[in-house]
Length: 140
Image (cartoon, rainbow, N blue to C red; front, side, top):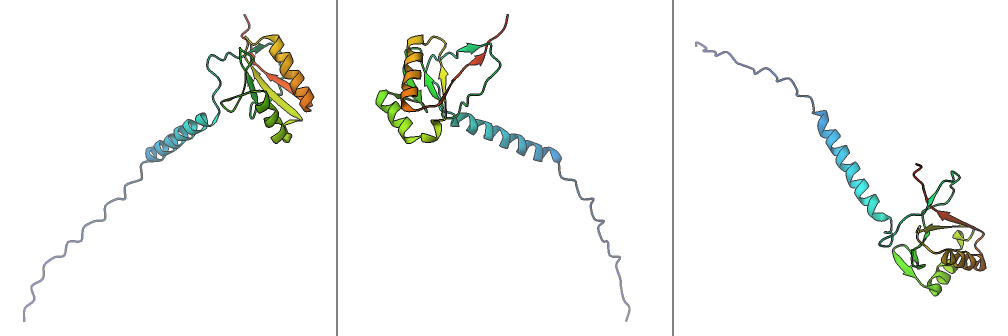
């Protein structure tokens, strides 16, 4: 019996293509962008037409988190909602951890009488340290 054999062709294994590193970079940039979009929306908005007060002092120690906002008209805001006098009293009563250090973001056009009245209300509510938050002034 005669055997007929055919040559067997085994294909050469193809070189494994390296993973493209730019795909990982695109994923990281996308996740960073998503994080920044979400983090930017978590901060409560300031009232319309709010302009920061300016300072030349370099000793800043106020915390902008959980701070109140005093507007041009003398209205007080917290977390995007306006507070009346009773709302301020309720806020101070339910958040005793802020009584040691309270921060207020002040509109540059707010009247000094409103600032003094707010400081008096805070003092009578038992706030020990009151910080007014302002941005650094552009020097000429």
